[in-house]
Image 1 (cartoon, rainbow, N blue to C red):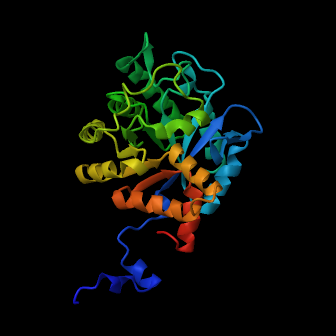
Image 2: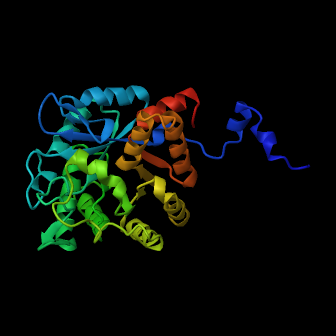
Image 3: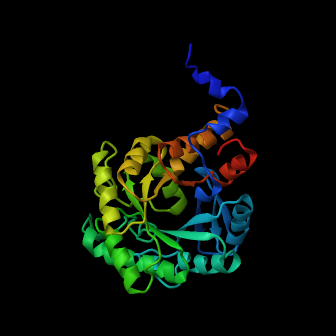
Length: 325
């Protein structure tokens, strides 16, 4: 035989030398849940090892992230008060706004991204304003833009709209630009599917809809061409980064979006992916560390350059140890 692919698999050094997919800690983003109150670090039952933090406890987790080499976080807010117009989403003293100011004081070198959505802040749990039981697209846009602006004015380095309303990227871009924030990037949850993988997150953030579902605005998981349309529309509206969510069951979409856009592609390994790994590991059915590495490598291999994951600290450690990267 002339051609022997096994020649390049003979040693760990050689395997790393010819590795096609390479990862770096700078590409990791860690999602964090912050809530009103004091002295709170409560574990999320459906996400073992993940917590909700009050603002006074947040610095302890930020320090752990910083020491691990994870330089970017995504903040999700859990307010005490919810109403039909999601007023705490864009309030100056909203939970995310207060958390940003505190985090920036304590850890100014970290990079802060905020989730821009209304579902955690509405009394009905949907991501937009209601007209009867229908989520009304256009009246929601101004509130999303106001929320993004309030985050940036409180210290957010990047905003990430996750609501899936049509036209929200342009609405946010225009409001940020008009307010003098032309340099603030937008990472759009452009290709976000109506997925059963979000279940634990809704427990974590208290954002389950009070009625119905989100299928009229999040995407049908049977569709791929529609995802390309969403991605291209958001790039045209000014999105600087395009996200695919979830990650594990949508690797094909990561590849397709990577191939047709000229902006960085992010993928969010969501709460359900995390919970399944944790549950299987607790039962001794899988090697948790190896699964974490394999899931991450598959996402990068598919074309993602940015990885949002609840396993960010573990992956940073594995990269340091040379087990992945």
